[in-house]
Image: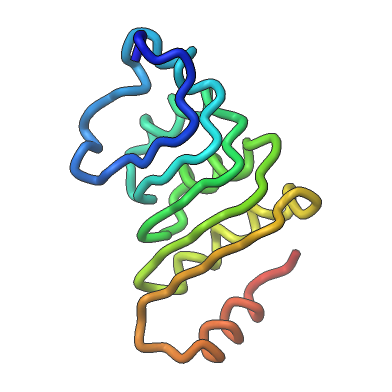
Length: 135
C-alpha cells in the first residue's frame, strides 16, 4: 500500500476478511481519498473502526449481505459527502436499521440502490421498509 499514492475504489472480498490491510504501512495515506468502497456487512468491528479513522470521503459505499452491523452504520454515518448507497441483501430486514443512518446525508445522497434477493414481493418489502422508517 505504501507504493500506491491514492486509491479511489476498493472492493473488499469476504475471502480476505482476515487480512488487516488498514494497518499496512502507507494504508492511511493510500486510503484517505477512497471514494468507492464495497464490503460485506459482517466484517469484524475492528476492521470498520480502523477504516473510520482513515476514510471519511467515501461517496459510494456498496454493502453486501446488509445486516445492520454497528460497523456498517458507523461507516455510513461518518462520511462527509455521501452521494449514493448500494445495499445488496438476501433479506430486507437487515436494511431497516441501515437506511435511517442516511438521515444525516439527506441533502447529499442522490441515489439509493437496494437489491433484495428474496421471495417477498416488491410491494411487501416496500410496505415493511416504509412502516419502520422515520426520516
